[in-house]
Image 1 (cartoon, rainbow, N blue to C red):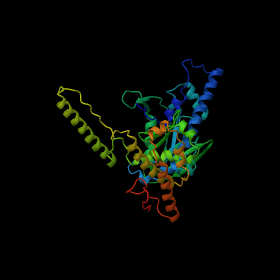
Image 2: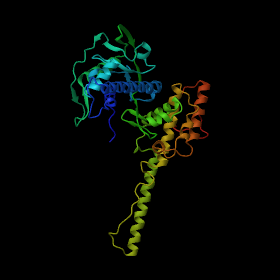
Image 3: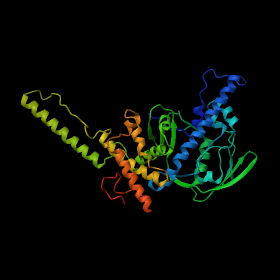
Image 4: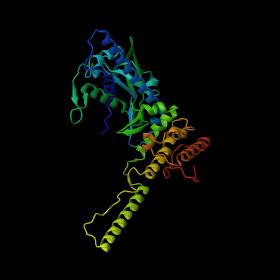
Length: 391
């Protein structure tokens, strides 16, 4: 089972929970070292989330019209209080306090380029009020069961304040935010923007891989390190979103899959009939075993079937990048560099013609940009075909 993606504040706590059973005593050099290491881990997590959001945000906002029902309006920042770390342990709590976390919401990650970022909100700001409503101090440390089984928990304070931010962002009017930075108190007004409702997460994994779980796109750290440019990471993000927009579920009845199912049905029926006739002619027992090949062409992981879905996702992903003003000229080289025995190559089947297809899409987009045409992907054609009209 794939684990559920946890809220960012809880992720910080879990990332920092590396203490052994023999936790050093407060006041000792080992304890102080553990606090410093945990503090550094939390700060690295914040920086990583900032980078991922900076890469994804232009794609999510420029293509919100393509995401249909998968859209959301948010204030584009994450927050934490000391009590979010209280469930983990004293080392984590002391590390958070050293960073500046307190009993009021502390901004940890703000999406670069978002309206809140442009208005002046920054990591390290402490929130005081939303739309002139004073934010209550976080005094509670109790957690409540959130999902069945009681293994996942969320605090009432976090649940309530997240709901407050969500309501504020969806009022179709600017959101007034009061915050403290150092000794100064500041006010800003933020006009939230609608975007595609996807999150981006980076997990430590030695394999080149990307996948989508619920509304979160998960990239492996190996893939992140393998990419030579930001545009390559952005292409993978857009590619995964394109799969979702096209509703590329494994069992979806596309014309190609329907044909494959028909061929398999005909093949299975013919082979079973042949075996039965052969058994009768040979005078064998009617209860003799009959071999049924099953799904030969229509199996869900059939490479030709999946390859078509990959071409479709490439087509839309390239459009999404161009609409976000992201350079696409060298993105096709990315697939050429992927090792054929990698997990990424296995998941995203690459067959002959994929690179040519991407180059054709690049040319289609280049012509549209030069002519000043709208960069709207075709509603009738998901994959560029040779000799087709590009407009």
